[in-house]
Image (tube, rainbow, N blue to C red; front, top):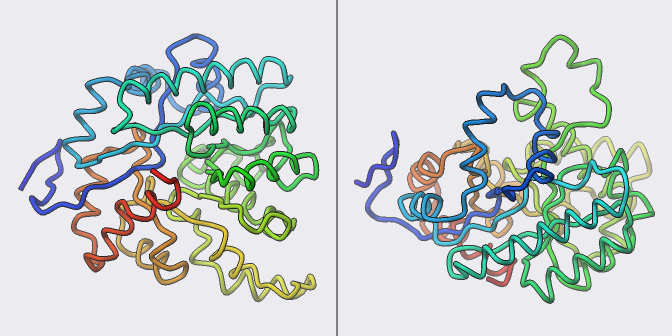
Length: 328
């Protein structure tokens, strides 16, 4: 047995790709964008995790090797979604994508990247996505929630979706806070963020795309959701059933989810939701991830290598599905 941290990984291992692995550019503007996302995290915790986020060198690579992770698809956690104006958003996105491309170029067998896309100006955002994919080699984009209160089903984002489909660039929809904190969470800070509010917000965002017809207009688009699908695999029957009250259409929401959405294990290291996702979506629609550095690589790998699934399924979720979807 191989030990990593407090966790033990079996000697017999399947190599893997991890898709929700974060970094931040070590510059004030980009660090400030990340800090704006996490007002509820204590200062001491921020200061502890920031150097880990900023590291893309030997420390991260060694941790990946110990956890038997071949490739990490990095994404910029210093998001531009909350920047009010398009010009600074474009500047930050351009910097982030160039910086990430340089990181990947130093270790092209270990790293790949998801682009940062500024959607304050959707046409300009679509152009930056194309530049990042065709010139910088990005494998898609990771978008952290709404853009100043606008969700991706808004008609203004059609140029972005058109370009994403044409490029065959998957869109990873990452968790974020709502524009206005609902009264549900008043006085209960424990519910805000990863514990619950991000799941509710991101699942609702994904459902807006489904009911808003995004996947009917762009049927070859692929949306990725972390955290084992933000609870959606558990709710397919009820979503189908209740959508009938609104006309529903010829295609059930569950059919769209199975065709157009894939999920990752990021931040959820438990057999029960994994087996639910496999049964609900199919083993071809689940991919391994960690959510580094907010979760531990060793813990993720130790769990996954011993999860109660077949070895053929383990190989698909570990690596094969990501290689196919991202053209690694």
